[in-house]
Structures are given as C-alpha cells and as structure tokens.
Image 1 (cartoon, helix red, strand yellow):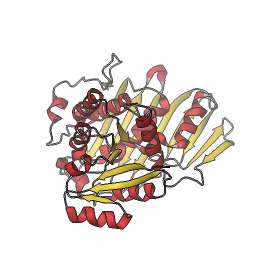
Image 2 (cartoon, rainbow, N blue to C red):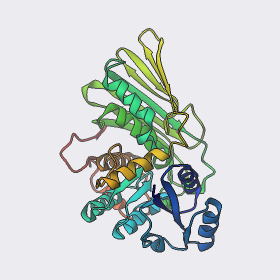
Image 3 (cartoon, helix red, strand yellow):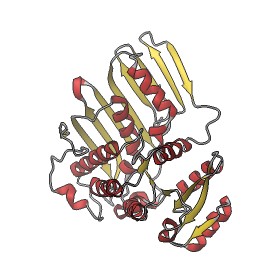
Length: 351
C-alpha cells in the first residue's frame, strides 16, 4: 500500500512525539520536515529517517509529495502557519490550541472553507477511543442523567519559557486548560450558558492557576481546574443520577471506570494493547476526512474549535489578560461576545 505522506513544520517536543508515532503507523510516513534553521531540520530528518528536510516552511508546503502538514510550532505561530499551508492547497492538522484567540481561529477556518482545503485541530483527546466509550455510556443512560462533571489538569511547567511570556501566548489556559474544557463540553454535549472564573497570574501577566465554574442548560453544572505550577491527579469524574464515571487522565484517557449507585464497579475499559501512543487516531481521522473530501474531522469539527476558543477568549477578557499579538483588540470590543460557530446560540454570561 502507498504510504500517506506527512510533512511536519517545527522540530520541538511535539514534533518528536509525532515522528515517533508515524514511524510505527502502518501506511503512513513522515516524508518531510521543515525548520527555520536548516541544520535543525536536517538533524531531525536524520534522527527519524525522513526523506526531505527544508530550511523554510515555504519550501515544505510547495513539495508536491506532501499530503498532510502537521503544524508543530509554538502557539503564536499556528494561525500564520496554517494559512501558509491552506494557500498552498495543503491539508493541515494544527497542534492544539488551534490558535491563541477566536479572531485568528475563525480567519483560518474561513480561508480553509473558501479554498476547500481540509483543516483540523490536533486535539488528540477528541479522537481517543475511551472518550468515545465514555460518550456511549452517557448516551445509553448507564449512569442515568448527567448532572455534574469535574475535570482537572495540572503540571509543573513553570520552567518553560514559552509559557510565562505573553508574546508567546503563554499561560495555563491555552496550553493545558483547553483539555479539561474540551472534555467537559464534549461529555455534556453542549456549551455552557453561564460561567464564573478566577485565575492566579504571574508578574508577566499570564494565567498560572485557573478555576472555572460552568452552568449548563437543564440545571447541569461543571468545574474545571488547571495549573502550570504543580501536578494534580488529572482526573475527570462524571456524576449522574444512577452512578458515576471516572476517567483517569484528562488529556488522554487510558482507563475509564463506571460505578453504579451502590458505589460498585460495574465496568472498566482500558486502552488497547495495539495502540501506539494515542496520537495516531487524529492522523487516521484526518486521512479519512481528506480521502472522502471533508474539510473537517467528525470528532473535532470546526464549530467545536471555534466555540472552545471563543470561550477561552471570554475567560481571558474577564481576567484582563491579553497578548501583544494580532487580533487581540477584538477581545476588548464586546464584553458580552458569545462564543459561537456563527449561528444563533444562547450567550455565555459571566456571573
């Protein structure tokens, strides 16, 4: 079978993880890598036996052999890099967060739809088999009606320079907070109608510890807690009227436990022994979308990307945290701006 050829923009930590995954994934190959430093690209290519290395992103997206580009650059570069790919007609999978605000996110997605080029977010959690398993448990009412979800994700990342600088779109929210938010929204199957939040900020004016209380329709609620100052248990618990679900790892579930009302373990599911790293599922989903002519992934559609980024904008606006980057002025225009996919929807209010 002919391999599906991936090009990677960037040579940082996530690029390493992707290259290691693709090397073990049948019918895929990392065909090309690009860096603004030609030697870094060459060294990365040699490490992973990649055929082509380029000293500029422009060269890679012009390579006719590349069938999908993975954007593995820092947050503040994602939108510009995605636009470069789309204008070259290259399908693109953008490392999360898709961008640093909703304005640039919507600009990229609008361009992809105009050019009819696939564009997705590499939110690997959205494609995790155990997240789909959890959704099925909820849909079939195994724990009754869901009333409350609590999710936390914390790592000690304070030593990472990119996370403490606003010019790099730093802070806990965009780097790790998007995971528990995405999980709660996905398992609730809706966006919140009201939210209250607080954050602890660093002297550089980025958020370091965030707490978000979420109110949903029908009296449902949720809480998200994230920090880049220390580690936590990183669990998500879904509480229903007839039991609960415990998810062991928010950013990528490896074990899910279902309990009944008597606090008895009713079912347990774990990741398959055949799984590589978990990153492979987003590539399989992207290839399927590209082959079938879709512009987005079924499990992480454009509207979900926009809604999540719009919600993050609202949180940062309420905290007074802005980045010295393009499009940030839009956060200050309308304090009641609704995160939405462009269709009428209930507003998310700060309370």
